[in-house]
Length: 153
Ligand SMILES: [Zn+2]
Image 1 (cartoon, helix red, strand yellow):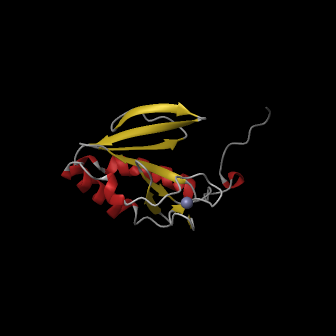
Image 2 (spheres, rainbow, N blue to C red):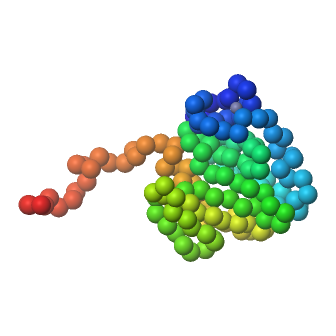
C-alpha cells in the first residue's frame, strides 16, 4: 500500500522515494485540454483507481498511479492522453506506439485519443504491470511444478 507524504499529501510508494513534492491541483493538468481527454481520464480513474491498493496523485505534468511502486504515468495532452509503464518484455503491437528499453525493462508508450481507445488490450497491459509491482510471485513454487527433471547439466 502506498504511504502519504506529510508535506505534499500525495500517495507515494515509500517516504524515501523521490517524488515531485508539491501540492498540485489535478484540474490544472486538464486546463486547455479537449473534452475527450478528460473523458478518457475519468474512465481510466473509474477502472484503474478501483483496483486494490491503488492510489493516484498529480505531479507537475502527469498523474501517477502507485501501489508499492509507481506503475503508471499518465500525461494529459491537448488532444490525447499519453501514458507509459514498464514491462520486463517488449510488446510492439497495438496499442503501443513506442517501446524503449530503459534500465533492463521496456517502457511502453500508449496514446489514447478517444474513450474507446481505453480498451481491454490497454487495460490488460496496465493491469499486468500493476500486478507485477503490487505483489510478489504467489504461484506454485518451482519444485511443485511437474517439470521433467534433467539428468545432467
Ligand atoms: Zn511530498
